[in-house]
Image (cartoon, rainbow, N blue to C red):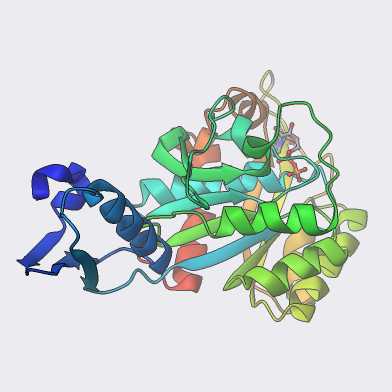
Length: 316
Ligand code: ADP
């Protein structure tokens, strides 16, 4: 009977009982979420179809379900580096031993397939359930960009976007214990509907240091308050530029503004990422800088550790 099953499933079979009219299977479901259990059961039934005569198949799972947390990464406006932060935090968390997955919910400009190098991949579906693709650093991920052809306008609205997003969240996330969600920029109805529907356990706000961006970050703060999502803290991106030629440090967008804003809003400050050519180049190449051991990578790692601690996930 085991031989009829895919190896990963066969390994999980803890007990088999064959009766005249029924075949009962007990499966070790530890580490599997509800969705993953459902997908496994469907796969089991499919593999055994036609091989057990007219016996009924009964499947029972034992073991602990995976406790999965969702952290949304948002920003008051586009272009502040929210997606780059999300991708690098995912890589940093993964390197710290966290089973992390990424949902790119940015319906206006999904960029995770480029950032995490999965542009040409297409997620497969088992029934209604999507299987995440595997991006850089072996991170399971799904993006609105995987669901439509490259270059097609993605200004989705209403029910169609809602259905596509639900598919991303309800995919087979297997043993992932933390999902990072790259939200669309802004603080409108689209974002609030997403928060209400998918109920993240926490949110991170990314901002650049100048005053205008900070006003947007404050709006992002009230968006999360409205959605009753606890804010884990603020990240300052594009802080301080170190000239690659002369080594002189300057602050094109000012510096420390986000930390001051965090203090004013009585929110934790999670850390700052410098403005750096290396970050942009690595991002464009689909090799997030947090994969390496540069100071920029270290900045993402520090923030990742603070997020893991805030959300109660063990990171090394
Ligand atoms: P958002 O998701 O907020 O729209 P992106 O993550 O797409 O922003 O970043 C916008 C652009 O800025 C990209 O070209 C990205 O490579 C670049 N970028 C992001 N963070 C940094 C940084 N710290 N230093 C240099 N370039 C950055």
